Image (cartoon, rainbow, N blue to C red; front, side, top):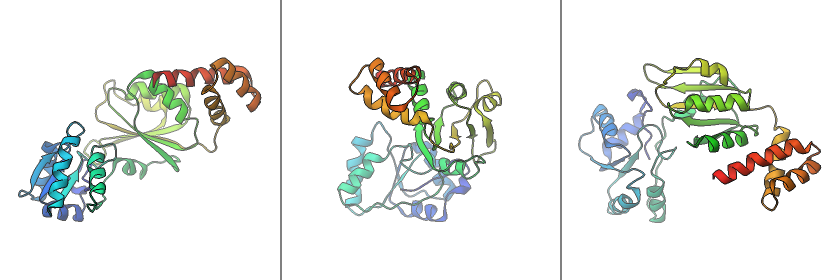
Length: 270
């Protein structure tokens, strides 16, 4: 499992270069992008095969057979560390089941790259990958996650980043940082509340974003209410759940009823 650069080709590790120059097969998410890296390190003798989310189940057994026959296989993603929001899990699972030795070759990762320069509190953090693409589901997830004290780390696409920041601005005043084009020529970081960060974005932003929402000092009362309401909703209607939750938590029914509706909508969307 070989980590590759997230942008700047000079970020590949010395060990990563050695491994890629030694293996018989390189399984890549996108062979076109990986070919550029292999040319950069002078590797031209290995077999380059495609392994992505649409062919992994079919291609995996063949790679396991090669491994069992004694060939070394390196798995790489488009950029960064394999399996961090990238394909490869099925192949990894097959390897473990076949008692094939799996070796991590660590290196670049966009998550840790962003956290390493983040000037706002970001530990502990909760990494959630890409947010849901559907607006209702995205907002519901953000409302749930932002009730927690952990910093929130996620990826967002250029055509959804503005809508996501608008959602956060309506839900929370927490500070956040966005990073784009990290390690590349136009590397950019913006820090502030969601409204400020939104104001700094182009109308049609480019590049994938890593977003870090700051950790809260303590868990809010809503976090406890969410657990109570969520548990009651498994057996009761929103109205009944809200009434009992208000009594348990010592708050007004209006608060728990609004929360019950939010959680019910999120459950229905799922």
